[in-house]
Image 1: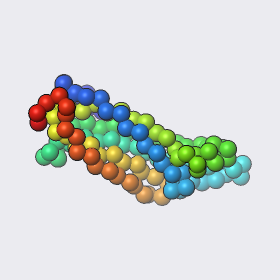
Image 2: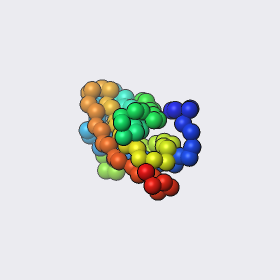
Image 3: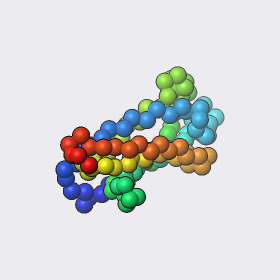
Length: 116
């Protein structure tokens, strides 16, 4: 996280839904699924200069019943990031460490508080 981020800024909330069948998970003899994923939010200005970053590494340990429930609803994750009130690009990313796969999405944001 950028501790030098100066206001005004807006806090954005991002919700992820991940299909657990898309993750490479190890299954132990007791049927527990183990995985390692990282979720990340990165904000850039129009010139590509990084403005803020939030990342979380999650060690997943899902008993069979929990895994089955997530197969129906998806694994729900939530993250928040503070961004300056100006034109910004937000890139979301999920990295599956066990498979090396990554998924990203970039979203242009325009502040409702400014004319930029």
